[in-house]
Amino acid sequence: MQSQKGNLIIVSGFSGAGKGTLMKRLIDKYTNSYALSVSATSRKPRPGEEDGREYFFKTKEEFETMISNGELLEHANYVGNYYGTPKEYVFKKMEEGYDVILEIEIQGAMQVKKMYEDALLMFVSTPDAKTLKTRLTGRGTETEDVINSRLKRACEEAEGIEKYDYLIINDDLETAVDTIHAISQNERFRIRNNLKFINNMREELKEFKEEK
Ligand code: ADP
Ligand code: 5GP
Image 1 (spheres, rainbow, N blue to C red):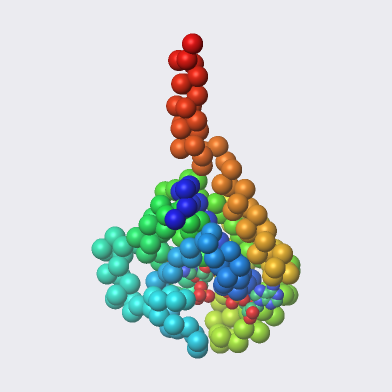
Image 2 (cartoon, rainbow, N blue to C red; image 1 turned 120 degrees about the vertical axis):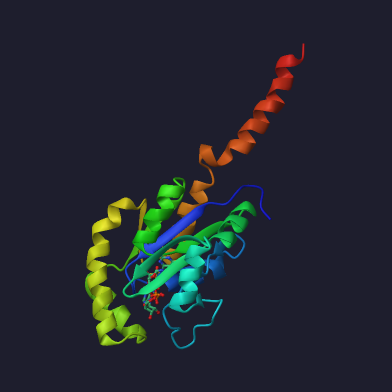
């Protein structure tokens, strides 16, 4: 439990840019600062992925029920599958003082930004397009068709980067992780994120005014 309410941090980026790898390292390195939201999806698990760890894996019908029950903060369709953020965990962890990370694509990011204007938006890219293709292919988890769809989608997503607050270039992993951490930490010093402290200080100072 921490004294200040946590930030809502949105991390988006091209498929294969290294978002998952970055998030894993960030949480391992700075365990007490972050809570990573686990999304629901209708896509099939990749080898090694576990239900409730990488995603809550749902059928299309189950996902649609979550939408109609109002369980999701945002949701979107990405290359043929549903993805969405369960609401409850996000607000609970922010109240507990954690910076909550949503690793989500751009349509969902824009939905959250509309609802929650203090959200901090970061966009992750590889240093160049060739590296993106190499990483996506090298991961070896998608068919050639899916890789091509994701690269086409990257081309569209690149048009939306200006809607984000920060660009994270994932070249050296540790440097990128520390950049994300530095930005998140800076956010904690914003005046608007310290209103509780400020009001408390004001109250305490009033006592000096009242003293003779
Ligand atoms: P995303 O979650 O953005 O789709 P992943 O985290 O799955 O991307 O990373 C895609 C591939 O790139 C993986 O094989 C991963 O090991 C590799 N990768 C991630 N970050 C780096 C990095 N900084 N340098 C080299 N390879 C990386
Ligand atoms: P992947 O299938 O590679 O795990 O994810 C595909 C895309 O879906 C990525 O861009 C990822 O950021 C995005 N994504 C993952 N979870 C969510 C979510 O809850 N909501 C939205 N809108 N996008 C998500």
